[in-house]
Length: 557
Image 1 (cartoon, rainbow, N blue to C red):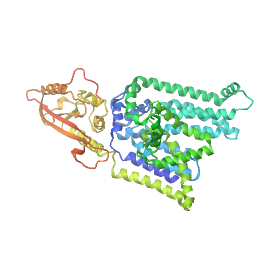
Image 2 (cartoon, rainbow, N blue to C red):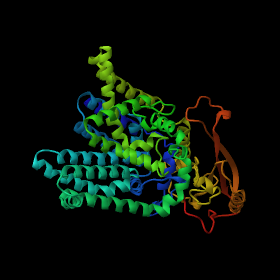
Image 3 (cartoon, helix red, strand yellow):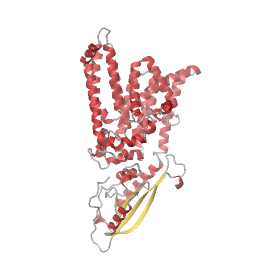
């Protein structure tokens, strides 16, 4: 087990330190940290992004403390992943033993989703951590509450108090935390009811006795805090993310909602979803690629029902609540493993237990029982090695991401030595294509890479420094998918030429291919964006020049 812990740490550290270029999903969110304040992050985010407010504030704080770059944007995800790994090892030790413990830890340590989100500027690693914290604290309470020693039972209440204190933090940090917290509430209520129930007491008397106990009062406080925290999150997001994005997200993730209006297709959807990306641990994906994990997960559920039904409900209730929310079209279920990260610990616990039972059974049948655990462990280590080798060979999500970053590293750094350089839309605030700043566009990647690799400050163009040897270069990013205000562009260009001479124009194509590029050929490009550069020098009949700006210039995005 210790080997898997070390391997898991090395995998997460290597992914973080490999310094992958920012990919589109990260950029859609990270562009909101370029120049927004804490209060402005409560407003609808650019590029249809939805993220918990506390997560957004932590990300912005990291940027303010460490600077706007990849390591700062991904630091909280990295820290959450490391903490989650140690916390899962502790939890697994409390619930499992033997080969089940080894395989559960190994599965959690080497799984691609857990490693991937250790180095992405998204909220999914913190979703995993928050889900584990709720589950671990509840298990610690449960183990002490059912202990025979009165002294141990008295200490159980401390864990409920910690749960009460952590709940507002967890709910503000992770949207699916309500599934974990709801499961804890139901489990604690059922446990208290079962432990204090007597045959003689009437139902009203039993309820009064239960609520009069210290644990009962703490449970009531927990639920009040949970409801208050959830209501607070809804209130904060009601006029921001929820109102702006609920319709868009419902349509975008339509396939990740159960088809409750067509019940005939529900069994097929249920099977395909669970054999697909939802349970992609350690690997998996579409087209039933996660079938083996699903089988192990089901075996683990059966084993847990036979051994401890109460604990089974604790582990499965977050899944059930998640499925209910998907039925109401409020949170996707399946579609991508990022939406199951809050129950990554549950998946790995049950799948690890189920895989231990399966390989022991197969080992007895094939007379290789002595080597079954070694074979399974070798497979998990091979998965870890394959993931790391792949990252070393291709340290990027797509080659297009790598080329976009390489351009920014070259152009924005070198440009400061050749003259004054400014992005017309982002530095000067003259927006020609508003939709490209709102809808899903690689304009976001351009903005993020510029913010990371441009050494100059926003709006720092010094007109007094513009000479024929140090010209002014104005940059415009064009996404042909969205309308471009040519009239506004012509007006800007005319205004510029009243004070400056346009001496050259350049246009660089930015081709975007599918994830796995097989041919570097324009006809296979998914789409082609463009970066246009307009170079100006002072007119000979003027001594001083001021950079033209619109009177009511919008804030730099």
